[in-house]
Image 1 (spheres, rainbow, N blue to C red):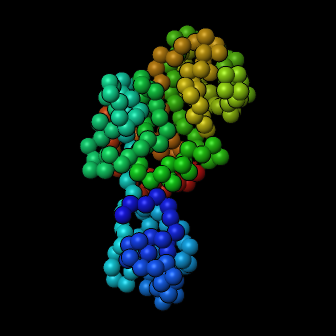
Image 2: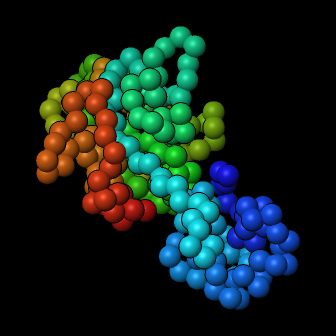
Image 3: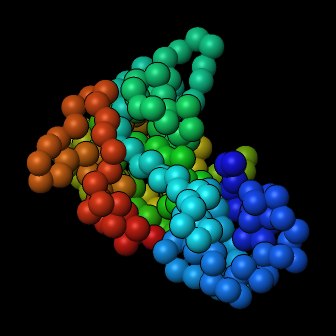
Amino acid sequence: MSISRTRLDRFISERLSINRRDVRLLVAQRRIQVDGRPASAINQVIDRFSQICFDDEVLQSEQPTYIKFHKPTGVVSATEDPVHKTVIDLIDHPKADQLHIVGRLDYNTTGLMLLTNNGHWSRQLTLPGSKVEKHYRVTLQNPITDDYAAAFAEGMYFPFEDITTAPAQLTLIDEFTADVVLTEGKYHQIKRMFGRFRNPVVALHRSAIGELTLANENDDLDTGEWRELTLREKAVLDGST
């Protein structure tokens, strides 16, 4: 049985084929365990990754999957596409068909991507209020002038959506290269912001999400490579929200 979020009594009733009223007694007798602890109430909310036990029987024990991926250019940020190769096509994982993308990258944008089958976790990372920083290295067609940084920091108004972007940080690397830090992800946001200066983006690479980068102490993901997050990396990301 695979669930998203539901009440404990509903899950137990369906799994054990008993009346919901009978679940109350099992909870009172402390025979139902949720994540290693006695259930607190019959209306306790559980999800597909809650470990549920009845006496010594494990009723549900699915582990979530968290993957970091170094996206190459020319790959679609989608789970399926009739024409182009997708991110999922490059991830040889037994749960690949369950994964969804946490923050998309454009077709020709490279860099760090996250994938998971835990919808609650991905929502926490992408909620506007979480303000998780995304770091990008941008290469421009024309020279960058001094007024770019102030315009990014002030935010830009896009009349089509009637929105103003949140303040963004731009740091000049050289005449044609800059690092940009965003706390949101509007549609083609970086390209559109530089478009205000009529300066086309030649290359775009996401180097970090929060404190998480493509590398850790032991390895560095090459283009097109992926692996599951370590417990330490997961904790770093959770600390960013």
